[in-house]
Image 1 (cartoon, helix red, strand yellow):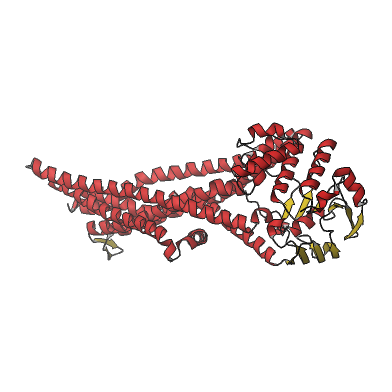
Image 2: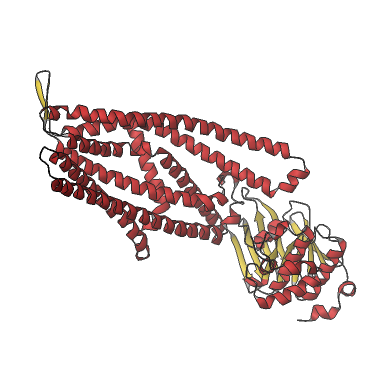
Length: 602
């Protein structure tokens, strides 16, 4: 009874998991008519195949029925033609079903990929998932999710749906066929006569139920083991990405052996789960093969009374065996497809996890109490910046205004909140309260991250104009800027699409980032360690270019080495507050860098 209840509960849980993923895609809406057409086509084609099952068995039985002395070639040919015509119809419906299945999988791949990518990017969840409180974070490899899991889940879901509908309809056809071939069977038990009206359907259901109980035990263990193995493989993929991202640091710290041990530990756990799966699959295979032979014996045993009374012939036995198998298959469907169901359950959990974490981040963002006012100056008012799991702010800014059209150096100890301030102003850090005044147009504010970003497989020109594509008219301007930043040697290959982050040195990458910032012509520019990888000469050239090309831009820069004449003001973090002081007379600075007229020009 416990096992039966567990089977029912697991099936309900599986249905809910699949419905959460695919339910919204199949709501009764006009825009969903295409997927409903495909779904209805699968059901109709399976109905046709179930009907054809009865037809083909009937025609086959009729062939056995005419195999008597005196049969003519014409009679046999007619019966054979009818049978082959029905078989041909089965083949056509099967081909059509495979085609429709493929179309539905293709649609789901495109639809769900677009839906989840849009949700992931448009809500800023791609960065926000890193800032969710630790107690709400769970391991999810988004690279594997988008490149493999969605497609795998769609294929399994469509395949399982088609198979389940087919199995159920053929189960009904099997019951009908067995009922038609059954005769009442009277059994005397303790002087009491018991009549079984349909021995074949009752026998098939009883046999299937007992076999299902055995297979289900293996099925439950396979599901749990498959889930553990998938989680372990996710850890392996995540660790592989970690090593790839931090390859240089690992090599310099001679951490090869440490990472090798970590890899081997994860691989060993995955191997242990696979060994368990192998044993379970072997047991399942044994029971499946044993069932095939035992099933044939059960059909013969159930047919004995009618064979003795000559109510059945050889053709009937073949049909009964076929129908019997269809009935048994319905009850054992879950056990025979336990691997697919286990994988589908695991993938459903990943969809759920992605939705939950995206929703968590969306809810966190909505709790942000940062008010934005539009003006051509940067002013902070009653700004409180907190950590995800801490209600107390680690940075308090009561009232502070950055000098307009000046270059401000932002300094303070590590961890004091410099980068968090940038993230809060960029609205990437939701754990913030207060008000901020920013330029009228959001596009007039530009943030230059510490780690230079390069789009995947793009030309250097497209990397500079990112997120926009580079038009031909922009190339002349970009070439001029590259010459100013002493990057002329890169122009010859700048149109090649590749991973430029692996080609350029750290200093060259930062120069490209500065050119990108200049191309955006911002009124407010935030820079986080923009010169950290440059030598003294490159830094000086870059500073001169920024001053000459962005004369009216308010520049705020985090720079631990801020010892040049580039900066007008120094802002430091002091007891969770900002304090400001001028660095040098403006006239002295301009003499060292560029003529004062440049700063006053528009």
